[in-house]
Amino acid sequence: MSGTRTTIDCIQVKLGVLVQGDDDMPIPEKMFERLKNAPPLKKTGLQGARQNLSIAARKTPKVSYDGEITERIISTSVRQTPVRVYQPQGEASLPVVVYFHGGGFVMGDLELMDHVCRIIANAVGCAVVNVEYGLAPEYKFPGGLEECYEVVKWVHDNAALLRFDPDNIVVAGDSAGGNFATAVCLLAKQRMEFSLVHQVLFYPVVDFTMDNAAKFEGLPEVMLNAEDLSIMGKLYFASESDKSRPEASPLLAPSLAGLPPATVITAGIDPLGKEALLYVERLKAENIPVEHKHFPEMVHAFLGFAGIIPEAVGYLCRYQKRLTDNFFNKMILNNILVVYPALSFLSFWVLPLTVALIWLPVLGLAMGLIPGVVAYFVAERKYAGDLERGSYVMSAILSNLGTLGGLCVFLLYGETGYAYQQLVTLFQYILMFAFCYPLAQFYYERAQGGDAKGRISIKAVLFSRNQLAVLGIFLGAVLNMAHISRPAILGLVFNPLVHLGAWTALIPVGYSIDIGKLREYFKGIVDLALIKFLVTPICVYGLAKLLINDPIMINTLLVLACMPTAINAVITARIYRLNLHIPVAAFILTTIVFLLLVYPLLFLWLAPA
Image (cartoon, rainbow, N blue to C red; front, side, top):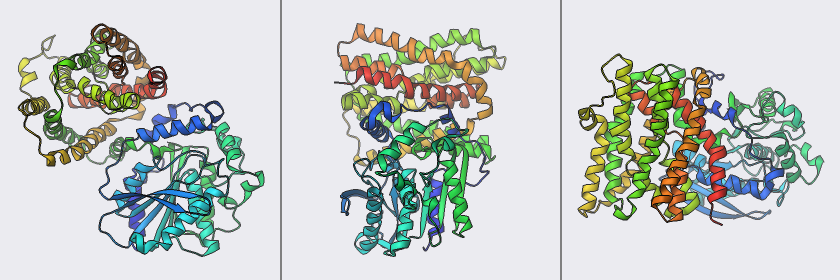
């Protein structure tokens, strides 16, 4: 394949997974070691598990893609197979990656790895075909595999029509999809109807005959558990003997000679890791070119956590001593001086400003001030140093009302809930820039032995470069109230600015993470979770009941009052040189508790019938 090496390298780097460096390095995904298993299939039932995975897939933020995305239905011998094609505009004879999603052969659809397919298409400039194969038990082995094979054959046979290069086809997949990818390579070798140039396998299933107890030996049951693997196997196979067929267990194939070169990614905290490592050795033994990357502190299915890629990039820069503190401080400064003011200006220019909903932004401020006051008194007794006190208070005040809050209320109440959330966050920039930043400066000056003893300078609040976002809010609101329409072209700028702001905010967060030092802070911030998830929602809910009659509005406020610590707490601590480890630990701990416990309970309680 012309440019195959470049293609695969781009995929590796853009996914934030295959980077140069020590294979044994700890990375931010270690936080998932603390996750407990989701309820097993036996408890949720297959339909419940499918629904949960579907909801999670649709919660994954969309990755921007400027090319053409089309939905197609392919006629295979198994059924009518949906595929999603990602294709750059105006290009001909493109390399193409055919991607098969994971999900234990029994779950998943086109949405599950949509973000990964977009990342690959963006990174490489190639076409990507995302395949929604038939799930077991409706389509037992070898139904799904045959379906995947026939889709690849369709890609090859229709290459001219699709503007693909028939000689540059890569198959890729994660978990169950990795099994399909390498099994398709085996079938292609046997049937000789087309050739493949590369296979990319993320923690693939390659041996169904290996005992589950052996797979989990020495490993915690994180993301996968032995019971789930057993149930999936029973649902996928009609006969126990099918498990030893090479098309199901490629590790058992008599010969792998003739397969295309491979890139295999494995995780240490993954029961499938052992068989995948054996498969890598088989490939090497049979002189198949293979590049293998093993991450001991990754969990199974880590490819789905694309949202933490920026933090991972920042962490790797720290671990490998790439770039400097000064570089990342300038990155933060760019957000303060350019990105945040621009986003504030553009959003307030078009945001509906109504007096009737004034209680929403007021209670939004209460969501920060109530936990801040409680945390202030806790921190004064708890910590001896002001750098620690300041970080603890920032972690209490600043909550993830924006991205996570908007997503959570949207899932519950659709556009109405999202609109209410926008008003709740109306004054959050003011809270952060006009209150949190001066307060952080106060703590820093007091820690340095200065005279900041309960005094906050009005001048520092109003005339600091950190307050430029407030100026953006003001200017946008003025144009809004003057009924001056925002030019359409500025709306096109907003989305790229959001992504730029997210990356330039999250990369310095990852750079600030020190896994070794964080351990000692997790236990010390348990009481912060109580402030976030008990004290604040009780107070805000009580106020909302007194002031508002609309039940959806009240419930929206309750959900937003339960938000975990925001990235902005880390950024604030970094800007004002407070103790970084406290907000990072708070961000990780409270987010995990919220996603695993708090929001599921809220969803069950508040979801419309």
